Image (cartoon, rainbow, N blue to C red; front, side):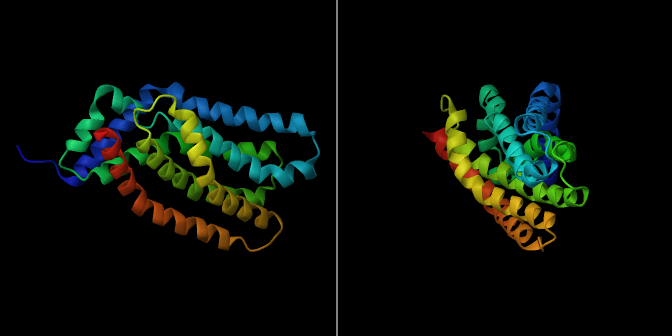
Length: 228
């Protein structure tokens, strides 16, 4: 029996994870509901003053999306550990880093992409000016996959650890600070009518670097965690 091609294996891995995520639609809806509820609470807590809400809108949306992604980060490899497919993936003939990259992509599509889709609504609830929303979307499109890639490495390091959710949050939050700073800086610059391409370029550069290195680090961390 011939070995499936690399493209076929990648497509099968992505299709499998998306199908499993669709069967657990409640897990996808939870971060979205969390983000909407948190965003709606800010006008009640701070008052309906447009100037204040506009000033904090970009940062609030970015931080809310980050925290919503943290809710589902711990479950990235959870089902694979339970059914033993993670060990089979390590022993598969295909490159482990590439297969894990497909799993990270599936996680981003099911968790981060719905949050990006509702981010214009979240921004509108905080009265963010409409011309700034495309910059916010671009910042999220660059920042969220970066967070997923960094989070995958940390999840691989803590595979099998009890109560790893809190440990993941403590480890990931410092790594997320630069991404949040650059993304919020781009949104703030767009609000003030200033050039915003520089922070977006830094985000894009960090994402390219993470796309290359994070799956390799995730594969190495996973092998170490499974061998120990």
